[in-house]
Amino acid sequence: MSANKDGTFGKPAVNARILQLQMGYEFPEESLETKMKQVMLLMDEESELKKTVKNQKAELEKVTIETIETLEEKDALHLLELKWITPIQSGLETLPGEVISSMVSEIQDLEHKYATTYADIETEKEMHLNLL
Image 1: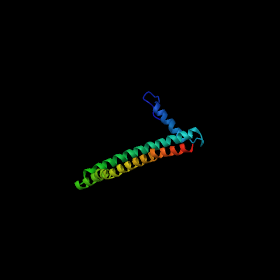
Image 2 (image 1 turned 30 degrees about the vertical axis):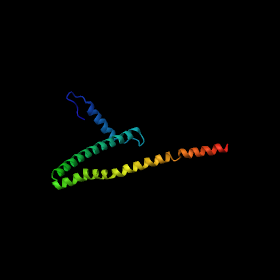
Image 3 (image 1 turned 90 degrees about the vertical axis):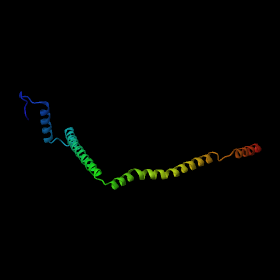
Image 4 (image 1 turned 60 degrees about the vertical axis):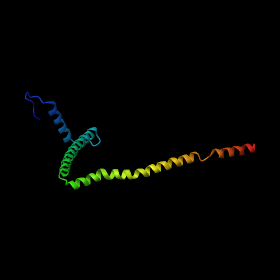
């Protein structure tokens, strides 16, 4: 541990030394200290993994940009077609079927709603009145 110019030890140096001592000491297995030690190790691992992911993402973006910039025109047009034209075209092709299905469903709902006609109700009403 290195001292400051005035001979004192700064808080970061002291905390680093405490952490070093804690990591070197074997605490009982189920103790809070052991769990805290595991948490710190996992947090360090997570931090390293995040750095790795960030670096790999940057590298992937760099390679992607280079690939896009070196594409030939026919390949670029093909990719644009796959990305935009094909999904739009298939969406437009399904629209009439969806509209027809919606209309059929609404008509069936109306048919069910008005399955019993006014004439049926009047006939049933007359039949019940005759029974009385």
